[in-house]
Each structure stands twice: as C-alpha cells, then as structure tokens.
Image (cartoon, rainbow, N blue to C red; front, side, top):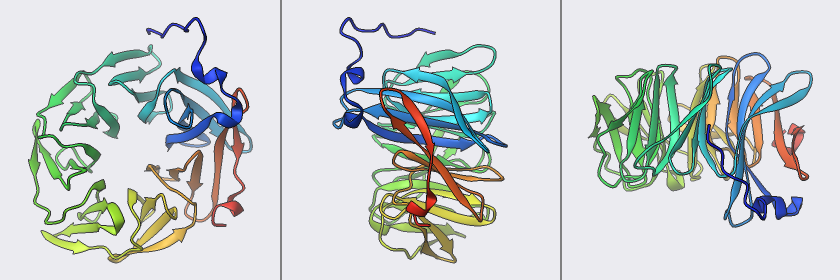
Length: 314
C-alpha cells in the first residue's frame, strides 16, 4: 500500500505541543466480546492538517489497543464488517480495504465522498457531495446515478431493497436499481440522518428539532427538545437519537425524551449486545442498563483512558 513520504521538515502535527492538538472521535463499533474498532483524528484548532487512526481496541477487565491504520490526513468515516475486516474512507475519496489477506486501497472518482455505511458484509455504500454515491456488493465499487447537486448526509435500510438516503436540502430518496428515486417531504430543513425502523416506519432527523416519521404514507412530527439530532439507532427494542447539545434521547411513542446527558453524541452503531456512541473525543458504551466508555488522549503519543461515567450524566 502506498504511503506518503515524510516531508523534510517532518509532519506538521508533530511540531505542536500536546495541548495544541485537538482530538475527535469519528466512529466506533462493537465487534463482539471485548473487541471494538474506533477511529480518531488529531488536528490543530483550525483543522489545517490531520493525523488519523483506526484502532483495534480490547476493553474488558483492561483497556488496550493496537493501531490498525494510521494516515497523515482525515478519516471521514469507517465501517467494520468483522473483527478483522474494515473499510476506511480517507479525505480525497481514498478507500482503505483492511483485510487478513492483505490491505488494499482505491481512489474513487469523483472524490467528493463524505460517509461510508454498511448494510452487511455484502452491501456497502458511499455517499457524498453533488449527489455522488457508490454501491459495493462483494466486488468492485459501482457508481449510482448522481442525484442532482445534493449533499447526502445519511443512508440506511434493512435490506438491499429498502435503502434510503437524505441530504442537506431536505432530500429524501429511495434506491431503485442504480438510481435514486425522490420521495416528497413537505418540509424545508437539512436532514442529518435517515433510519428505517424495525416497525417499518421511516425516521428523519433534521436541524432545530425537525424530526419526522413516515408511517403508512403519513408524515408525523416527532415532538422533541428542539435540538439538532445527528444519529438514530435501535437497540434492544428501543430507538435512540443522538445530538451535540445534550447527548442521547429515547423515543417514546411520537416523542423524544432526554435519556442521558453525555454532553454530545454523534455517530451511533448497535451490536446485539452494546450500543456504541461517538462523543467529542470519547466512545460511550451502553448495554441497556450500565454505561462505560473510553477516550483518546495525546501526550506526544496517543493513549486511551477509561471514562468516569459519573462525569457524563451519571
């Protein structure tokens, strides 16, 4: 796999003092047992340059990690298909395929991609600016017909036949073959997340509390606190919504109720056993009853520390 050459003057981030380095969690997944994957970015306060990591984390009685991937740029998104198979989207449309038989990378054109999402091991999706998206069904990436000038923010479905995406201009579309078909939503807002629920309803998270359900072709407002919700996930029979103002809310009927004051919650992913939530530089872990988590730190080298969850709404 090609690696960037170290500049003669060294990497810019190595010239920063530790307290000048900003840390951001990108995404995290539970991979079964005590295994997790987590991606993080280090940058300066203006995000002019970055160094990113995908970590293979073990968090049981102790907290340890191995660096699975390090890049001298931004990781925008990643998905873990199993404990040893991951797809990582790097800024510039670079896809890293990390696998036991050898890592590979491919640069997608056009390269204005923002997020990668996996339905399962056989179906993965890339979405981005200018209506650009790709689908991978076990082989090479295949282009989906561009959809106008949309900036897609989220993609979700329960089967290959129920894939939906949403965007910053209030777009809601459904995938049919290799093209997106629009669904009319009479609301002008920036949608942050789309989620097809186990109940068959379609849920949309928008800015400033614009949260909706589409159920039996009826558009239903979801009452809430007026926050901008970013993620939606179902876990052990409950539906959770994350936001950057409070943290985590739970859906009760057609209303969202504050659930845990984590401070901030971004991308969420659920395994059968755990709900995993990306915080600012934290990873929050919920088993349905108890909370725990870890965060990345930097003192010239990266390290992980277990969280005191009493400091996060406990």
